[in-house]
Structure formats: structure tokens, C-alpha cells
Image 1 (cartoon, rainbow, N blue to C red):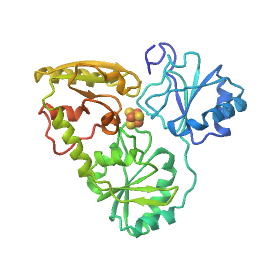
Image 2: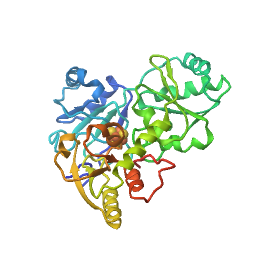
Image 3: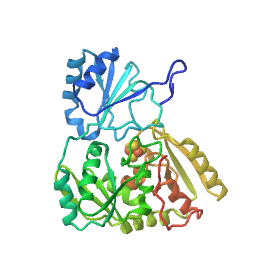
Length: 345
Ligand code: SF4
């Protein structure tokens, strides 16, 4: 059974969602009665993975195996090959991606943060002079703050909008590093975006996706980062496109992860390359390592898997790696401006 393909008989495996790693999850695991389960933790929780596995095993009485592969999104849950004997997966730190089929029943534990200080955070936003018409975007851990924070910011005289994304996003205001369609749906009505969460991964992607200033509010530390320099980000990508413009031999990168596999896109790009007199071969992988591309006779690559491979990790590779829209720019089929983010629908 390939990744993400439901079994031929019976209803497709279901996703269930839990806010936290606590007794509600343990009770649901006991009620489900799996023979074995596989636990997957995100990169940020790897240090605690052993403790979490022990806690889950002791609370449920079910044998637990840890998925050792690093996991960065709900798109790369353990495949049937990685955990062939587990009939339940528990995935920490991610919301389900609604349009990705699951190979087995999967409990997504979103690790939601409790509470926060909406009034205090709104005061931080107010003091910084953030524009009046704001769009709010949050990582899944901080979605519970969106409502109270919107109300508190509104009391500073600002309007706050929250967008509803496409079927790859489970919640309004949510963002994935490959999908900011919620933000895009309201971009025309706001002067700036406020990203609520930690780290640079999502705000940088948001800055690529929307031509609006992106401020970043860390709700745990109460700090606000000034807008990302979008023009510099885009300029860097345009230089990469320029470096690949004369490439004749292209490698088209395709991941076999259920939530990252865009084979139809890859085939369409291969046809575009042929129509423009370029050679293009499809390369399959699950998780890509720069060493996988060493010694190959390609001048450049186009990546159809997680867009962040090109945008965040491109410097790790010896040859230019473009996103699909950038590839079309290199072929002369799309203009360099306006820059188009590689949205994964
Ligand atoms: S494709 Fe990349 S950005 Fe999208 S959910 Fe997966 S890891 Fe996150």
C-alpha cells in the first residue's frame, strides 16, 4: 500500500485531534485499543521523545515505538513501511492536513498553548505603531490566542481580519510553511500582517506569500519583531532564477511522503521543460539529503516537495534549486514580478 493510500476495504483511516498530550489523549488511545502504536514527535521535542513514549506506554498499556526520522509537518507522518506493525499513530505538534489521506488511524496532538496575555500583547502591538488594518496569522500552537488577541487589538483602534484558507488548512488563521491561503484571502483588505508564534520559519514564508509587511509577535516572550525585508528575500530568489536560466539539464524533485507528493505537477513541469528545449528527469526521494544530488549531471533542479527545501535550504546544494513558479520564470513562462510563492494546495 503506497503512502497515504487508504486500505481497499472499509472506511478510510480517520484523524482525531487533541489539544494537548494529556489524559484525554490517553483515554482515547485506551478506548481505541490498538495492538501497537507509533509515536512521532517534531524536531523541537526530540529531546523529550523517550519520556513522552514512556508516559504514553504507562498511561495506556499499549506498546509504543518511536519514529526516529525527523518530522517537520503533518505532511510526513510515519509511512506504512516505516511502522508496518502499528495500527495507530500519535503525531505531536501538528494539525491534520484535511486533504491528505492517512494510512492508519492517526491522533494529532496539536500541543496548544494555554491562555497568554492578550491585553499585554495588544499593548506591545500598539506601542510599536503597527498599521491600523491588520491580518492575523498563527501557528497551530497559538490558535487559541487568536480570538482574545483580536478583540484586545481591536480595542486599540485597529481592525483585525482572519482569513479562511483552502482545504490544506484545518483552521481559520492557520498557516503552514507551504500554504498561506488564509492570509492571501484577506491580503487586499489589510495593511500588514501580524504573525503570532515563535521562530522565523512561518513569518518568512508569509512574507514570500503576501506583498504586505509581516510583523512577528512571540506570545511566550511578549516580543515583537519589525517587518521582514520582503524585497531582499525576493531579490535573492530572483538571482537564483537568473543563475538557472540557461540550465539545459534539469532534475525534478518529487517526494514520496503522502503530504508532499506532487507527481502531477512534476509531470506537467517535465512537459514544459521539453516544450522549451530542455531535458528534465524526475528524481524520487522521501527525505532529501544534499548528498543525494552530488555527482549528478544536472545543471539545476526544480523542487515539487516541501517548498522550504528551495527557499530555506537551497544554499546546502551545489546547484540552484527552484520552486515550480520560479522554474516557469527561468523558462520565461512567468514574469519575475510579481513574485509568486509556491503554494501547496
Ligand atoms: S510541505 Fe513543508 S511546509 Fe508544508 S506542511 Fe510539510 S513540512 Fe510543513
